[in-house]
Length: 517
Image (cartoon, rainbow, N blue to C red; front, side, top):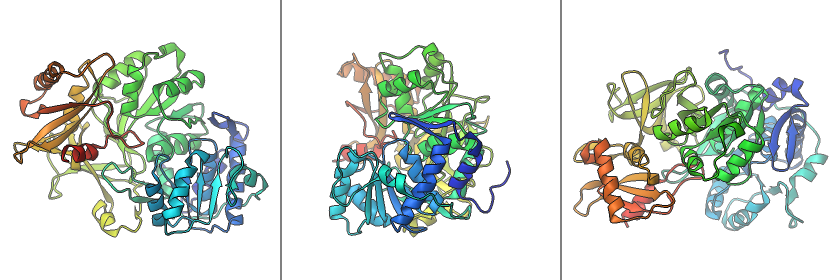
């Protein structure tokens, strides 16, 4: 891999490498297509629109839009102008938006019309004043003072890209909030470039002739790489989906658009395999899949490969590292593990004192690599405890076996200590979902009323199964047969659904709060 240039505007970089593909389709959404030539023009005109709106270099804009062709235009257009897009979750509450507006001091909000009610409520309570609200594809006439993105974009002048340093602040993402209050994660132009060079091209293997579809949304670090950074870095075509990633919606795109690269999360793969109208192998064109967000259970990966004939490359990334740094690969895959370090990254497992742990021992995962975030905005204390020189502390627990494969043991905050011994919630969950009656499972540690921590499970049953004392005992016995007996769940709650972030991560802290009320 050649080194990242010292001067880099990632939006300009994408325009230049795709200049010869002006007529090729870059994006397909539910309303039409956008060619590479049209993308480059609209990106330059969006930068002109920002100038007209008096939004200046290094100021921030909030980007809260569904996955449509306008999303990459806004994101790349801001980079083109040296303005910093802050891409946020489209499922936020008004209180979340209010917090992020004040925290980022955004000058404008670029938004889908369906999200306007929450934004309007947030603006009513936020102390920071937003100058402009710009709406993509408004449904009917807009209220006074709001701006129609596409009509203004048509009239805006195209302007040259701002010269930026590779290490210059390019964009923010907010951490998913799986452990509480989101943090503003600040990334550079170089970080996008490195994830494409280290993972997108050599590991996932995205090529110019691919059609890429990511069910993980663009506001998610994983989705941003899958649906923008990687495909645009090689001139591939991207399918965008603005609706929720239900099995029906996902399979519709897999069958109709015939994507060759598909990116999902474990909970989605589980629901896709449980879907009653699952398409046949010959009805789709997938050659490779990616998975992140949480560990992919071995049973899910094996069943998916048996049905569709393609591998799922399970990996782990983070908002702080921008994309995947530990991964399985097409020529070296072991389901049930997260694979090995992506070349260009180093990982270490350390104990509570920061010392390396021996093989086979659970430790805290630390990563060193060139895509690490610069900081958490306005949070020096958390920045100092996460970004440790060249190393980033992930907050995840892992174990490495004698062959060098890493296996996820859970978030550091999620680990359960039973009778003085650590229990990985992931390990117990992976056994539970192997039972034919179980669709999903989440495991936490909860007090037994005497101050002792016991393993507690929340289980979503497959359709056709009913909760009962008999099935509860059957599941407990099933875990005992597969794991050391002290790890089995003393309590099992049957629930209709598990609390998750918009990126599909189970929010175990919410289950702990619920159990401890």
